[in-house]
Image 1 (cartoon, rainbow, N blue to C red):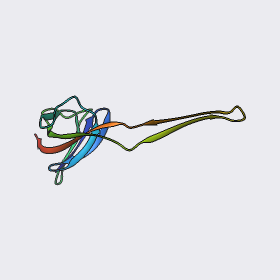
Image 2: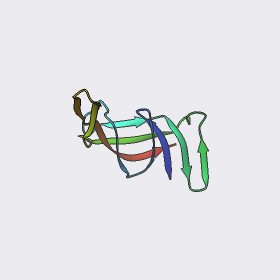
Image 3: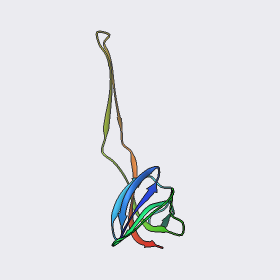
Length: 103
C-alpha cells in the first residue's frame, strides 16, 4: 500500500516504513506529524483518487531529524565589466519516517 501526499507544497509517494526528506517542518525530533492532504491511495488493486484530496485518510510520520542539503552555488557575472558575485545556499530539510497510513 502506498499514498501520494502533498507536504510543504510538493508531492511525495510514501509507503509505511519509508524515510524521506521534506522541506523544514517546525517540529521537534521525536514528534508525530500528520499529513492529511492525501491525493491518491493505492491498496493492491484498489485505487482511490481525491478531488483534490481524500477525506478521512491521513499519513502519520515521526520526525527523525533536521539536516541541510548540499550546497548550491549561485554565480552572477557581467561580461567586460569585471563584476562577479558568488553565493552559496544550503536548504534545511526535515527527515521523517512514515509510520502508518490510516483510512
